[in-house]
Length: 88
Image 1 (cartoon, helix red, strand yellow):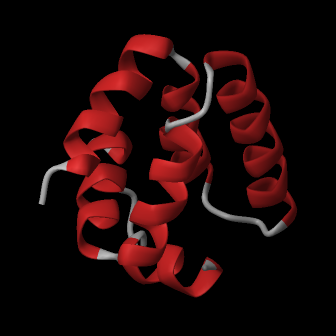
Image 2 (spheres, rainbow, N blue to C red):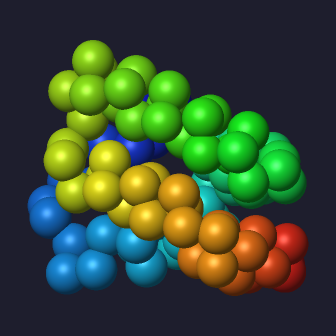
């Protein structure tokens, strides 16, 4: 997955969160991972996201990607992202 992330995040996007959503809609692997996470109960989702962010740090993933994932810690943002990603 790291290669996929780098493929889409070569340069710092103006809005990392919107870029993350666009990438997830284009790349099935990322979309499925996010849908699985976003379908969890809030506490579980937050714990899963926090672990993923730690993994991303260890993989030296760009900070703006980690921040984009971090937006999903917010319940309202996570719900909206889930709705968007469910659409085809």
